[in-house]
Image (cartoon, rainbow, N blue to C red; front, top):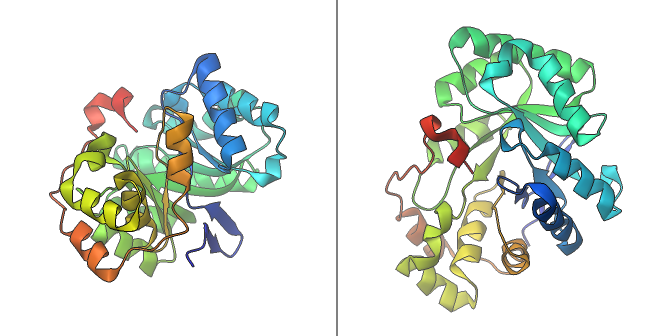
Amino acid sequence: MLSNTIVKDTLNIPKVGLGTYKLTGTEGMKSIEDALHIGYRHIDTAQLYENEEEVGKAIRNSGFAREQLFVTTKIWPSDFKKLLSAVETSLRRLKMDRVDLLLLHWPSDDESNKAALDSLNEVLNRDYAQHVGVSNFNLQQLEQAISLAPVRCNQVEYHPFLSQQKMLDYLKAHDLFLTAYRPLALGKVVTDPVLLEIAKKHERSASQVALRWLLQQGDVAVIPKASSAERRTENLAVFDFELTAEDMDAIFALNREERLTNPSTAPEWD
């Protein structure tokens, strides 16, 4: 049976989290609260999303103890050279003493990356975060990152139409994990005939099959975004069935290097 958490020494992260991009205002806060009551224990936000206050308030309103939850936030490259103050801003918005995972949201120039990575060590020293990592770093940038700070993960776009095999192999070799954003390829998985056929066989949805495919690769967490309670419930229900080796291979074969994230259109991310 597939575990619902990734466990590595002091790290214990739920494999299915809630992506919160565009979950803003009162409705966004209610959606996050709903997710917590459905069973989500991993919430992913970022300064770019402009909803850290809503995330913090939803968590407080939910009634769950802070230590029951895993909270990730991310810092934008424009703040890399003042990372500590940016992290403090996030903590104030969240009304938290620390987050569970702090990520650099996107790589910048080499000098800025080095400054930010060096500051991640001080983030840990000040207990602003339990763990630190990066997002959207390529292999060369990731190699530099792990030489400068104890990063635990790389959060990247990953779905059946975009291979991340080289990245995942590298992360596993260094005992790190991968967090997959846009795991449902902006909804494109729901119409793919291969995924639909596999879903029919398992009496599941194509979305559940895509998420299960990611999770069965090991050391992968997923943070799908869902606009309805029904979809949030569906995305969480992926631990009580298993894809066959043939299923897995058929989905791997769907790769067409289709990247849906463009750094020049950042507000569309996740």
